Length: 363
Image 1 (cartoon, rainbow, N blue to C red):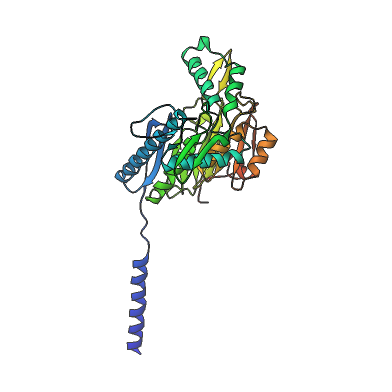
Image 2: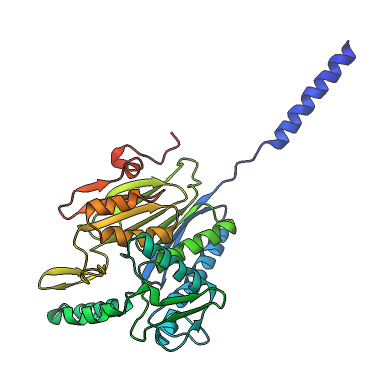
């Protein structure tokens, strides 16, 4: 009997040792942050939880390098030696197809798909019109006393060359051809968000799984914060009437998300003044003028490129149609800041808003 008891005790003790060996040792993570301002004409901030600062720095440098690559590919203003980019495509409009890297092919195919999904409100073939607005905005910023609106006749003339079907993509040969010599691509409505999504997915595959990549109004969060306290990231929504510098008073609302994207489009982000009126950069393809329905809109969905394309369309569409557009696409939520400062939101958005009781806490 003593022998049996001893064997049982040894067996139980062995189980205890094995169980202890199988227990997962909790890793400790620290929060790090860094920024760069070399790409997409915006400040890019990276926040992350890693075991060491060296690990974070390595991820940060990879993120910065990849953003720089994508910026050059999607650039419509500058040439780069030995590189065909979107500007190269524009320079060869009506002349010949241009062979480009797969990242450009994928972006344009993606943008054409979202042109259909947004009822034509997000149109990368609007380059001829947007260039006019860009030139007038630059002049208005540099010489405010001479700021003015582009003549409507000039805009209407340019609008004749914005047919998305004239953007011809050959995915087998990796070429893009603009069928009309007077047309041009402007990928500003999708490129930043698309690039952010590309980088986020690549970095998660490399092991960077707890962080935020914020490129201007485009925020992509990776999984959850590893601070041992929160289960969801809290992302602030800018108050259009306050300074864009981050502080408590500049945040109108906070939403809580994991592994998703938040993109905001607003009339306060890029603009110039004409006769005391704000003239912002979000141009309606139908009116050829800045959209005037809202101060800002925020879109939440998994893919940052889709959120970017949608935020433009949602901003440029009257509220009833805008809400129907959002509710017609699975996994998309939105918030509208109206001209009078009031807020509208989808039910799914309300569920993740601080003002409606949402938190980032485990509990």
